[in-house]
Image 1 (cartoon, rainbow, N blue to C red):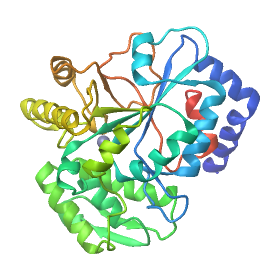
Image 2: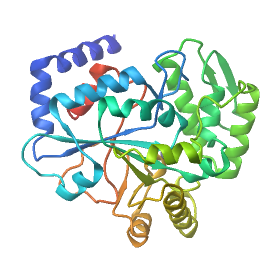
Image 3: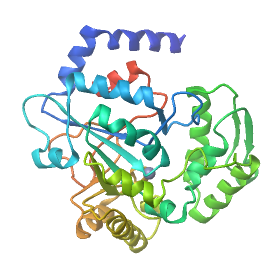
Length: 326
Ligand SMILES: [Zn+2]
């Protein structure tokens, strides 16, 4: 009953007259809409993971965005700042440095012709080994499965066979539980989960670009490369000196690998704090992006730039509502 009422209310809000009012309200003060994606997947058969947006959905979202926004490079948005009059602006970003960006985004860029910022976590590119969350999502990318971590105090997770948002609610819950575990133990648990289902031959469904693929992506003039740490740990959960070294190392490697200046950073999982923001400034970054699902308005800290995280299960209607600030 509640779900039906919620659905009806969403339909009403997403109808053109209400949506236009919401959009006008959200755009008061000239905010910048910064979108955070992770990777793209084939339109059919891709991994059933929130981070893997279908190419067709991304193309449709860019078209929707263009109806009411100018899509600008991050540097332009930073130079102008929020508060500018005129047509609303949006910035497109991708986190992590997944192989799907080379496979699906790079060939799409000439057609959609939009500037994008790609924040790359260098550890997985250096080793070729996917981070723990991709190993878990990759192993559980399809089909029914029970993951019993009750003996570890982390619950029992029953994934249904049918792909979609309901399945993701379970898988996303498992990932959130694992995020609360200390890094070394989390790595071991991820390996145990990944071991339940041996990976298919070839490259895993979710994993990093190679250095050559990254260099090719970075060479596209529409692409700005930003850093995203080397370790991709939640930086507020490790010692500050270690976090700072990881931030610095990712920038140094990216400069080396792409031959380009790396001026921007994104916090893994959006986790940051005052000492970390000060460290980002000290290291010479010009901005650091967070993930608080808000529009970037005047007065925001440039080292905690708000972004809207968009994933595979955001329908076209939901996407429009999120752009309108809901
Ligand atoms: Zn990340």
